[in-house]
Amino acid sequence: MAKIGFRMRKLIFISIMLFVLGASRVQAQRYDRGFDLNSTTFTKKGTWMVGGQVAYSTHKNDSYNFLIIEDINSTGYRFTVSPMFCYMIRDNMGLGMRFGYGRNLLSVDSAGMSFDEININVKDYFSLNHDFSAMAIYRNYIPLGSSKRFALFNEMQLAYSTGQAKLIDGHGTSIVGTYEKSNSLSLGINPGMIAFINDHVAVELNVGMLGLQYTSVDQIHNQVNTGGRETTQINFKVNILSIGFGLAYYL
Image (cartoon, rainbow, N blue to C red; front, side, top):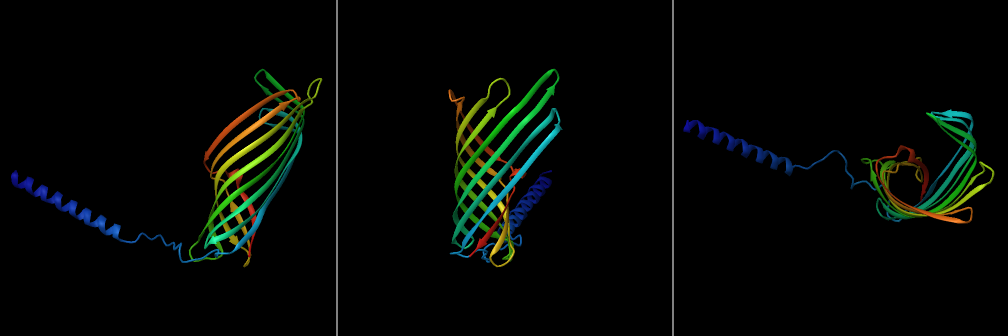
């Protein structure tokens, strides 16, 4: 029995030594997935990039029904423009600024919601708001292999925005109006992909992935009553509704 125990301990010891030697050999080997991120210069130091994004959407509902909301009659639009510039302080690395303006209009002639025995009607509702933003950006480009046409990039944004909104409710015997003024500070990470059409023009696709935002809203109701609201949001998810397309020129 003692002889069998000695052989078992010897076998366990040899197995442990082989495992340690194998692990050290794997650790000594270079971990290579086929990407060489240091040999390709996608954007050279001293390069300027100017570009931006423009988006416009409109809608019109004529007696439209959506789930429990019935008889929707409304019109509206959303317009945004966001110019930007960036200077490459190092190869594949840049600093810059992005500015933005957005305007949103919603006019609801009528809409109704019926749920069990609860009926809610909205009539003659009008909302108009616009906002301005400025943000500092940091970009880091990651070439795809040795390609100088396609690359991934990550854009970090530190932004401040301010906006105004006017809300009018004509439902009832008198018109009710509310004025709002908002201020917002945010930090975001927007990864994306870039592809050059020619030597200087490129198209971009980016998506908001991580963000921290603080918003403060001051409200005046009928020029008499005042109120306020503060919100903090943290997002750790990919929002497919925030996908943006842009055009950039490198010189």
